[in-house]
Length: 312
Length: 178
Image 1 (tube, rainbow over the protein chains, first blue to last red):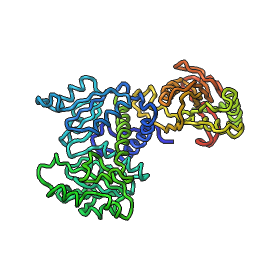
Image 2: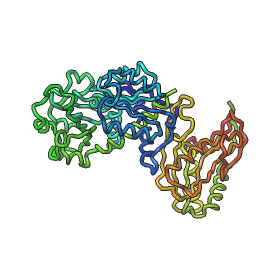
Image 3: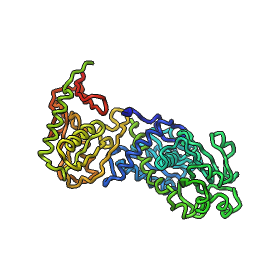
Image 4: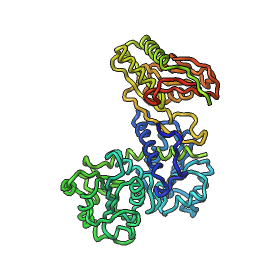
């Protein structure tokens, strides 16, 4: 019988970097149970009735915000939504002041997205509430990495020993960094693939290898996680044209069919159809993109539940 | 810490057959009845009863499910521990069915209260009954009583009743630990 006294080793989810392998196991097991819950006729449990959660988004988001909000509501938490464009932040209020004002309304947990790397860590040092990082600049996006690994585990049975290639804009991607940490922690092999200009220097120090030839990378891997080119974060041109990017780093059915084996295709969304992957690939049997979205709710329920249980 | 045997393997065997007969008496062919064992330890009792009904009394197609109540408990965040869940497996609808909830020990009644709420997520049953192997008579916190009981015992608060099953613990015995 599993040890009933297990709990997370952390009080906040600021990044995968701060987690241990046992934390990921516990989150995945809990997510299995919540996945069963969200497939019941009545998809709600009363666990977090007395918990209030503020979703604070200083940067645009559709899927992550919806997914968090749904997860919170499925757990019966009270939810406050706050987006920076309509707030006093535009009047010059600091981050800590903004959040402290919200907390004085007796909020127990904060889910925050912020354009600056480390915003969550800064906040955790100054305020008294559990914090979940929903993306901080190009740094980390831990719940995305957890749901990605969870989806791999669901499709392939295990993450350990699997070969995963992350393709595209590694430089601007928080999804890439969190995924590298999460996959390495669980014993997967990780490669990154993309134009040299979009691969950070010294990335090998994280224990990943670099491949610039997409076909070689795909032939090597079991899973390809296709990232979006983040045009909004690009201050200069990193490649000559979108068309050239697609020719060198886009995946289409011809390329997939020419590989030795069937690989799993993932994408954290939003997809630029026809750029990093074609519509046929996104909608094919090898794609688990919609499973990722469904699993996102279960994973976020698990993280929120486990962190909430540590709130005094 | 000392322990004494409340029920031996032979007594458990007799009680299980009696409980199966009592269930048969009220539910006949079980066509509109479902058995739900409570996680983590009620599932062994539920499986045994289903097995006896099928093998010894030739009841066909017993609907057997397992319900985990962790997310419906009323002690979330009470003692600083994380409550970890077990698997719920109910592969049928319980709408308009007669449900028999099955657990090993009835004590405060709080688990059963949580189970009654949890069951609502799976439909509106016609009725819900409760079957427990051991009914601890004292210190019920809620007005909950079993419809079928294996043995009623008088046990005070600091004592513990432990039900051991062959599948899990290697023997069928009920101990009183104090």
